[in-house]
Amino acid sequence: MSLQTDLRIATLLDAYCAAEYRWELDGEWRALRIGQRAPELEAFFPQSTLFGLVSAWDPQSNPRPEAVNRRADEALHAALLSSGLSFRPGFCSAPNRSWREPSWVVMDMPLEDFDRLALRYGQLGTLSWTRGEPVRLRMYARQPLMAAERNCVDWIGEPAPGSGPGRSGTRPARSGTSDR
Image 1: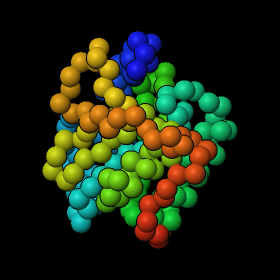
Image 2 (image 1 turned 45 degrees about the vertical axis):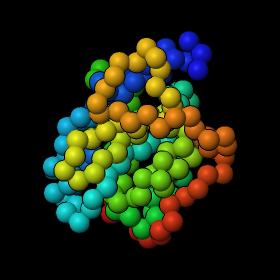
Image 3 (image 1 turned 30 degrees about the vertical axis):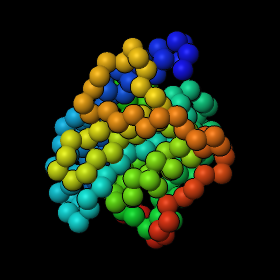
């Protein structure tokens, strides 16, 4: 990894860890925090054991036109609908709202399928956790040497070739409807 890439990923890591994450139910937006448990979300989905937050906006945190992001989000929504899994609208933003993007919280998607979905939409980071455990940040990159060690971050490594946005990726195996 180049020094410039290392610095970019380390900077984005700091931004992702400082970001605000939310999920919606019955018109109310509820907070998620990296490194903290999510008892409210887990209480609304008592049968679920795996949780993840994923977006299709701004792959690799590179800004794109809103229309392009909306089309990608519609495709992600369609993929979630076809998965048959429960999911809810989500939202991520910088504390000062200088960066914001819609996302989705999905329940019980196997981690391998979740990672494929994130990579299909070119994401650098997602949130994922198991019931009763703290929310974790999953980074689809190698850990930069200059990045501070964080107990709530999983470094997944470099994305596989052809896994970026607009490329044929895999989709979750199950099919069904949304809880939206």
